[in-house]
Image 1: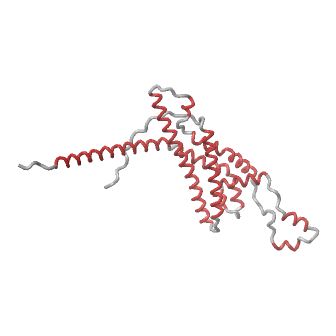
Image 2 (image 1 turned 60 degrees about the vertical axis):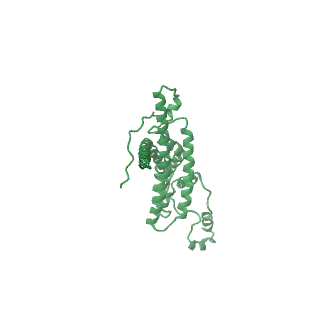
Image 3 (image 1 turned 30 degrees about the vertical axis):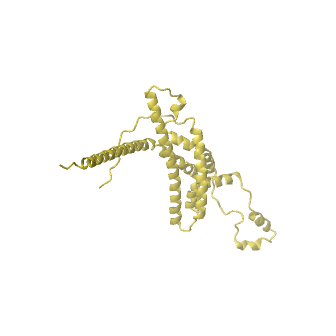
Length: 267
């Protein structure tokens, strides 16, 4: 016997909010905290899963990035569902003539709210990525990586001093620090490119502002699922109530059948 699908019902009306409300700042900070935690974890995982095969490297890092986006999508779904439920309650209050403050009216679901929270939470890193995109240059051979055959020239007075200076690592500058931060945030894409492909790494840095905003985009898309998620919840409630009623009727019929089959008086 096939399982019946939950009966569909019309979504309950809800009061629409505004793109931002009094909780948006706190929610954006929460988004930022999640972004930092996920970026740190992905950095560790990507660092430990370095493989030589390009195909495997792309496959593994694609799976990591998909998992990251799924995390933010699910968090957006939860917030959108809660916001829609809040809108349903406020709609009932308005219908009953109960007082509702202007700040409360801003809290319910709005199609732009998820994207706004995600963008606010990513804004700092978006600015850093934007700076890197305009200042990025192809990373050439760095200090301390001279080939072994140059060691014999170290003691020659005319070029030895220059070679020694070249092998001394220079201090990190402002752009290098920003590059490290941005690369940690988009580590799966950096790992896909590979450190040996300088041109592809440069392309990744040039489009890093878009890559940094991917979690915010996933969060906003998840938030948009709030009304449909509430509709599904209402459908499941109706279905469970119907099952409960049918089960109670069967139990009553069973009890009535047992009572009718009770001991009969013999003549």
